[in-house]
Each structure stands twice: as structure tokens, then as C-alpha cells.
Image (tube, rainbow, N blue to C red; front, side):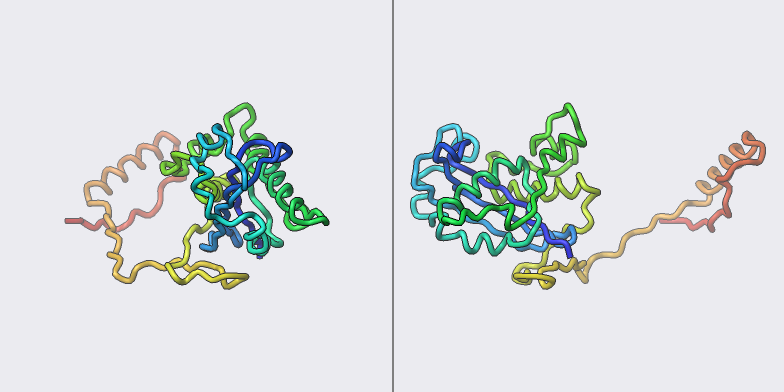
Length: 246
């Protein structure tokens, strides 16, 4: 079983060394390349002002965060969610540096992400696959036809969900992106698999078969191909029975 957590953060600014802090964490879980429906999402009170440039990106103000918990209040739940997983992050050095900074503020042992999880940087991956091209999350959404129409501002949970789609497309396509029905998502381990169910009242697909005239024209075309190839055509097969549709 391969467990991955696709993660994103929003911050008060760009440099943790300058005292900037995490203000939002969003993460979604993948098991064996399937979204399980398990999510982690918390807003965090940074106990400091937020740069105007950062607010322009994510729209989160200090006033909005005044009643939210500090990082110390969510750290245990957060570490439990990501423990042992492979983290998938776009521009991972940025987010990991901020998380490590927050952990270092709380522990003299200076716990670090590298001691808890392995990390995949999708920005580095995209630059390798698409050198010389734009590889922002928005650019990758356009390249891989991932819907990001709701992304007017950056938001950690929404960006994590979008990145999960992009990552699966970058690494071979989406194998199964069904999530459990509301109230059915489990909490841990193998129980977190989601089951895809088709509605019982789903109408049967309409099957439209070729008409007699269409089959005759198709046969004539195959005759022409076979004649021009001097009998070496590989397209001639036994013609199906004609069924008229109404």
C-alpha cells in the first residue's frame, strides 16, 4: 500500500528566517493513487501581521485568524495525518522550510519533515518533464486539462486538491478519483479506500449500430483499399450483421 499526502500551505510572507509563519495548511490523502476522501485543513493564528503581498495572493487577513488556534494547537493532529506518508508538494522547499521552522519553534529536538516523511517536489518534476516552459500550478492545470476555475485566490486545501489531480496526470493518469459518499469516508489505513458506486437507476447506454447502407459503403471502401494494396490489406474482417436503428 502506497500512502501519499498532497499538501499546500499559505504563509504571512516569503521567508521563515524573517519570522514569517504558516497561516493555513491543506492536505488530501492518496492511497495507491486513489483519493480516499480524508483531508486535513486548518487555519492558524500566526501571532503577527501578514504582508500585503501575501494577502493579495491568498486573501487571508490577521483579523480572520484572530480566533484560530496557534500552530502548537494543531501540530499533533497534523503530524499524525502525515506520519509515514510520501508528501507531494509543489515547490516543496518553500513549504518544508516553513513547516520545519514551525516545528523548531516548539521542540528543542528540532523535529524535521525529512525525519517524518519523504517528499516529492512536483515543481522539480514539472521542470524536468517540461524544460523551458511555465510550470506554475495554473500552467500545469492548463497543460493537463485540470479544472482550476474556482481558484480566484490561493487556498491551501483547494490547491492541494488541484495538485493531486495534476500529480496523477503527470505520473501516468488518474487511475481512480472517486471519493466515498458523504459520511462513509474512513479514518486510517486500508479502511480509507473509497468505493466507486454507480447509481442503481442509471439509464442504460444507448447502442447505435450501423445501418445496411453504412455497412455497404464501409465494405466498398475496404474493397478499394484491398485493391490498391494488391491484396495486402489488413483491414478486411468479417462484416458484422446489419441492424437498423430507429
